[in-house]
Image 1 (cartoon, one colour):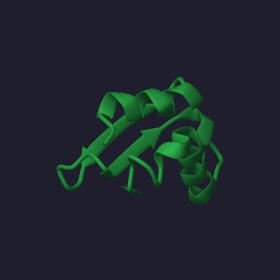
Image 2 (cartoon, one colour):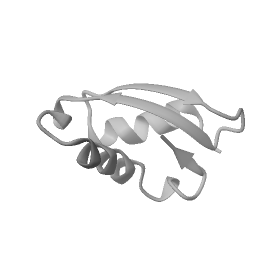
Image 3 (cartoon, one colour):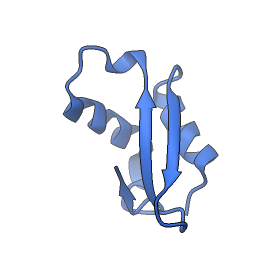
Image 4 (tube, one colour):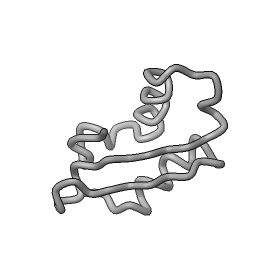
Length: 69
């Protein structure tokens, strides 16, 4: 399990200007919906934005974060 502040800290570590909105989809803090807004995404296609968020979360994805949309 990861708390919203922990997830937000990982994302902001890679994208300090990010605005992060999280929703726990199941109540178990392992399935999340995330909206991330950052200047780092400007001009990037959706797949590159998605990969950047996954990279920021690192090993947490597939570990304490079971699913992320």
